[in-house]
Amino acid sequence: MTDDTNARIQTLVDSNDVLLFMKGTPLFPQCGFSNRAVSILSHLGVEFESVDVLQDQEVRQGIKAFSDWPTIPQLYVKGEFVGGSDIMMEMYESGELAQLLEDKGVAAA
Image (cartoon, rainbow, N blue to C red):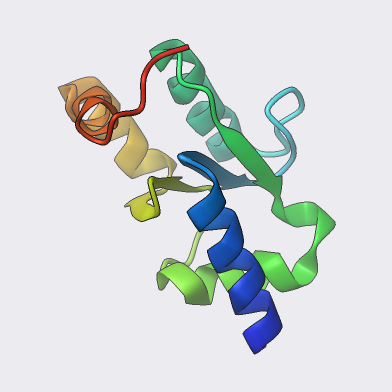
């Protein structure tokens, strides 16, 4: 990954309280995992920003190196990498995701 791509990703992560790197957009997810991630965040009533990795090949590959996580989607909360859709689902079902958002000061919309 280039330094420029790394810096762009870092700026995105730092600039958004809740950020989801995904395939597609929240209105038109392009894979089931991205759809599940959007559904979880929507159900929790959290406002979030998203980055469509299908629109930028450098970001699509770069985010995997940035987080040291091989799959997309990827969720960041207040600059901290949380995980992909499977981890999000486990955390959602156990109440951990809602607690994490509350602990980080991210209010439901």
